[in-house]
Image: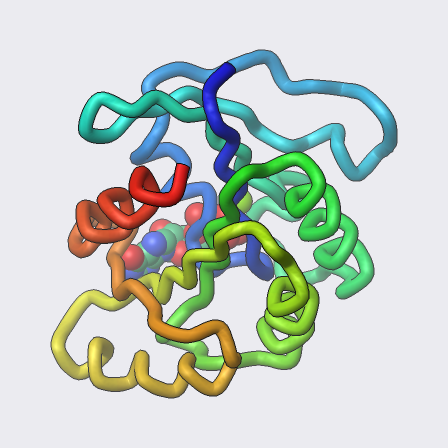
Length: 163
Ligand code: GDP
Ligand code: MG
């Protein structure tokens, strides 16, 4: 069975954009346990010859900021249970929010590898702005732009290292 990678983070940081860039084929949406799992998208991907499954969380809030923090926490907890590696995505355009800190608090206690991806780094200025994300206490981060793929190669190199 291939390793499972979950992409977590608050709405609108670019999780689905990254997921869609990554996946080669979609799997059936697993409609199981609870409402929370209903809209998790599963796909298959590979990098440097390593195949893995990807979960895009939080699809149910598509394009909306109107989501309870508790729902994000549930998604993150499910991802922690289910995944072998977690990609925690944040957004340099908005900077750190309370929800980001909340998710970081959950992830700091996790024994599984967590890769911090600072998305929407579309230019050099934003690459500099990304340093604020050190304060989340998750160590080093990867700067990426999911819309054009910039920086995603380095992130995926690191990902397959820890699979
Ligand atoms: P999700 O809610 O985390 O799944 O976020 P989405 O993937 O739906 O993206 C939210 C918005 O951010 C969309 O308008 C995307 O086009 C935009 N977005 C995603 N990645 C980037 C990026 O690298 N740069 C910029 N400027 N916008 C991005
Ligand atoms: Mg999404």
